[in-house]
Image 1 (cartoon, chains in turn brown, purple):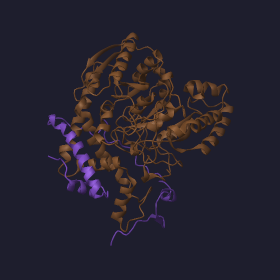
Image 2: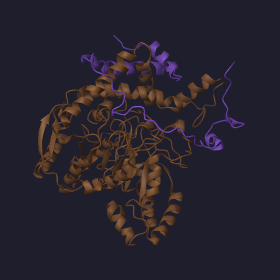
Image 3: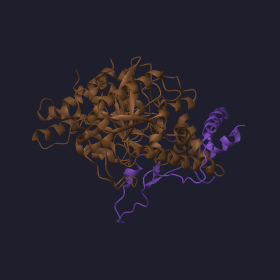
Image 4: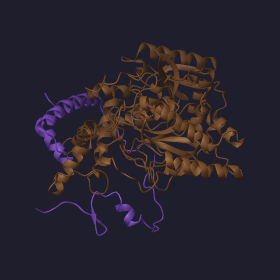
Length: 485
Length: 96
């Protein structure tokens, strides 16, 4: 039994009753890291000294009895593309191997104000480009359920650390499925919020019109607690939405009677593993018993989402990653005699192949003569994909399907062909293009590997997504199963 | 027919300020060609009267009061610089 088998609200109660201290929780995190990290390799940087100092400070505050935030004193892991003041932030890229941020991301300011304690920074695909965390410039993270398999990506470190019990929860980021896919592969809960729900200030930009930060947790309720703290408008991010943040935990009523669920036929097409299909159909049965009705629908432009995504995300990335030039921060080559050479060699030596490939694809799609044919065309198809969702949401409350076509694949299985790797994201990418929220919750196992159920909601309706996910979770025990490490 | 030639890949790499070897240029040509060929399935769709989406939420021109605020301290900003001198970023020769 680990302390982290408790939910956030149980840990909060234990702290309030003085049955455990905040230092105990931080100790438990580093104890578990010491025990399993050699196998899992989820962390790029640990914040041990600072975390222990902060735990003592917060324990003193707790003794005075004024602190009521549910996250107060709880250890958290942070994906390494979220800037943390004074704590190395690399995006798992050699080009930022020594980057020491001089400010906190808005989500970090909010977490710090709530009293959460940063345990360390978590591995990822370089600049969040990838679906297996194999594109990390530093290390290979392994799936706690099977060490020969990938944890998914790009937030693979975040999902693996939560699944392995190294931290009770973590933050990830999701541009095309990077929270939900690793959550599904590692048997944990991951939410991509509505675009604009959470400030992106301090999230190192990959594709600015798609990126969102979101929580990766053991349970749906924990997820809601974490989203509560990080959500809301931010003057530092003009794309953050000025829309009130509801009480997400209050939405978890357990009552989903009468809700109407849409099940897109396109999400059960070719390439979707039979075991995954059966798990999702079984999940729909569970939900039906809880009083929902579901019908098959069509999201007719789903098959075009992948191509649309790679053109748009790569185009935005090619612009966003222009800032890594060896001038202001990060790696600089020793081998250049003039400025242009310095840019080129710094970038070539600093970026990995997937990042280079996407920068070149984006540069091509935006270049003179190709802009209309590729970039603008993709923007127009994005409109069609968004309309697919709007049409379905006129009649249904949520959309449900698998999170991924298959369970976690073998390390090295898909690294040789970029397109094969991209196919992993066919069920998660449309959600980012439409900007709607979606969660992955555990819904079964295939050959001992977790399967994720994806629940997609209307813009800014995380509450209904959570309510359905929570009702399903409470009716099943998949979330209680843990990998043996 | 290939969608992108070796010469185009080298040109794009140059535009993106990436130095690539001949071998890498060949590898990227093959891979980018496959991705671009895949992306051309979008041409199956008639999008003539479809407006482009650049942003999913209906937000435009988010304004705020123009109130000057202090920026980050110079020494902090220079802290991560690979090279600096006299409070400025230092780079190799721009003019030969």
